[in-house]
Image (cartoon, rainbow, N blue to C red; front, side):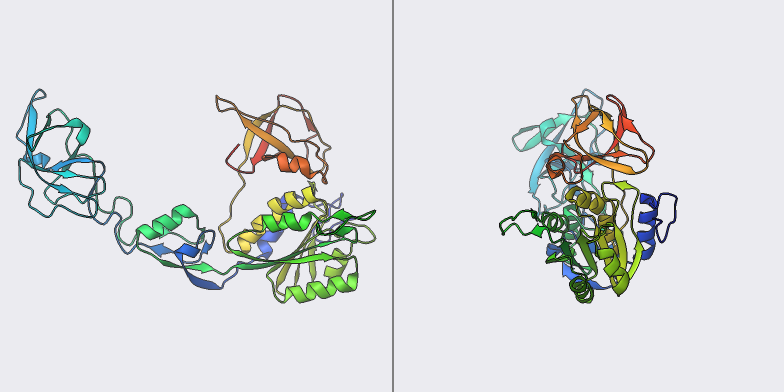
Length: 417
């Protein structure tokens, strides 16, 4: 069967074609709301933020020590010492308010404002203190350990450019500039459901032929994000009329609907046919494993993504297609998955024709080199291996298998191994 958008001899479209089609079709949301930065973690910044102050606002000490005017010291050779009189203390938040004269110094703490006439801070470990004076070797370098005003951020400099997904470090930067409120794109409204007469919820008792629905719990976790408002529509039976009513109603209240199951070619796989009646179908059948059957389309102003029914396929296709699509729709800047080369510790079997994502366990040795092994069974229903995995092993379309010791590309699931 040939794809409706990308006819090929195999009837499959490539991962790159599918991603390009989604990127071209999806426009980011435009609605913006103003929120306090205490609620901004994980949200997408909508407008560029400039600093109304220099950071730091004044010169300050980079370490605990003594501040003085180095230019006022008399010339000396490498064997001589300098002696200065301590005339006060500069604390962080409590500047020294006296006049610092030549031959004098103030005890200064890290972050404290440096007196106007001081040009040097010497570390407390480098001096000897006695009878209200300090002495230090003249061979020590001067004019050090002072952070200039604006050395981090200049007045009116761009603090954070939009769009940007905001993390803890961004919030700290905003707070350091005294910015308490920012403009962010509104949250995405996302609904999801599972299809299949064989599915029951974990609250029920299994009967012969039934299985527990794990996909909704998988999607609930994957979709959990500060810029998402998520609705679980439950399990929908294989009834075309009921499915059409649900899609039409949900489309009026959400930006995206995600389903699992019902997008293959079986007699009871109704999602594709139903979407064709009440919306617009853009593509299905991808050159990927797991996850070949995938539907992308639209119902009115709502995007629809139909994922396969097997849970590993749901996870892989979410990571490869749904996640970047939602990022784009939310207004976030495009990102690219990190790929690293690793030495394979197992023999990996594969047939050419589809790009394959096998579940792996990535390890790092003491010398920093990376190796990877299979996490277990690679069938698309085997979630135990997926739960053990900390990476995806990427085998390209033409690959026909990997032997022990060969290098493979891996996509880590996190920065922690």
